[in-house]
Amino acid sequence: MVDEEDLRDSIPSYAFIALARRGMEKISLDQCFLKDCDNQDPKLLQPFKKEEYEEELKSIKKIHIKCKKCNRIFILKLETLKYVAKSTKDKNEEALSMGLVHALDENGKNLGHIGYF
Ligand SMILES: [Zn+2]
Image 1 (tube, rainbow, N blue to C red):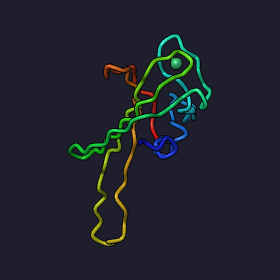
Image 2: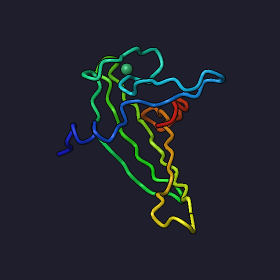
Image 3: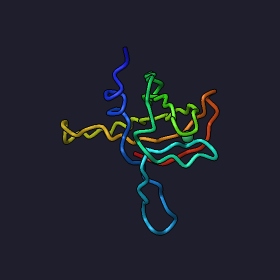
Image 4: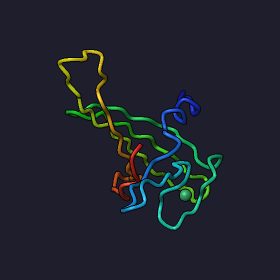
């Protein structure tokens, strides 16, 4: 059985959108990204499945979420890009990483780039 809380924990609470001149805007990922649905209530969003895989220089997580308001399913695709910052001076320097969030519909069709996490 899938642990819903565990799935919830693997979703970042917020994503950041870059605005042209005004820095970054923070948006909540606790919302339904399907067209014509305005659900922003986390209680009506039920994550039920997670896929995880690695690609060259990225690790990808897909969280399948059921929206109980519009009764449809969407997928949050979280891509973490791994840039390894190599330094000859400081061996403890950590690899930098950056994440991208996309929303997909039930069939894997891309609904658009949401932001960064
Ligand atoms: Zn919805």
